Image (cartoon, rainbow, N blue to C red; front, side, top):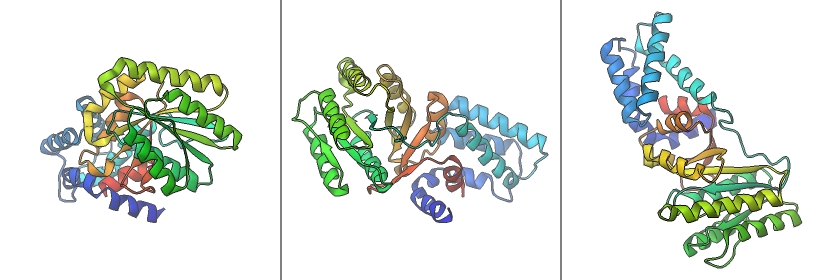
Length: 305
C-alpha cells in the first residue's frame, strides 16, 4: 500500500504544484481566521473545484472547526481530507472496477476527439489483461484512419487483439463483430474506442444510440458500461461534454485522462459532484501501465501530502 501511495505522490507532482496554496494554508504555524477561509476559498476556485462546491466545502469545514474547537490550521487538514473523501464516496460506484463476472462485458469509451480515448482504451485493455482477463479492442472510431492505426499499434504493443474495419465503416458493425469474436473465443470483455466529433453532434449522437441498441440486442443480459473519457486539463468545460454524451447514453462513469498534466486537481471533485457520476479510473502518464483505479482517500492524501 505504501509503494502505491509513494508512486501516486510521484505521478501527481504536477497536480500538487497547483494545490501548493492549500498545503501552505494548512501549515503548522497558520491560525484559523478570516484570511485562512478567504485563502481556502481562493485556492479551491483556482483549483477548478467550482463555485457551488467551494462554498459547500468551506461552510462544512467552518462548521467542523467550530464543533471540534480547532484553532490551528494544521489540525484541520485531516478533517479537510475526510470531508473531500466523504464527498467522493457519496457517489455510487466511485472507484468501482470493470466487472467481468458475466461475459463478454462491453465497455464503450466515449468523449470528444483529443480527449485521450484511444490511448485510454489501450491502457484499460492492458490493465485488465494484466489481471488475467481476455480482452478485445474494437476500433469503432471509423472516421479517423489515425485512430484505427493507433489502436492497432497499441494492440501489438500490449498483445491484445484489435477488431477493425475499413475507414468510414459502420461503428456498430465493428463492435458487433468484436462481440462475436469475444463470444467465439470465450473472451471476457470488449473495449470499444468510438468517435467524438461534436461538430457533427446530431450524427454522432444517433450513431452512439445505434451502437447501444446493437450491444443491448446482442447481449441483453450482459454488463454494459458507457464511460466518458475526459481530458482533465479542460477543467470546467468538461461538463458540456458530459451533457452532450448523456443525450445518447446513460453514462456509468468517468475516466479522467491526462490528470498528471493539470494543476487543477479539483476537477475530480467537480466532475463527481456536479455530474453525479463516479470517477472509475485516472490516467497518470503516457505508459500502458499508467491508468489507476480511482481510490478516493489515496488520491486526496497524495495530493495534499
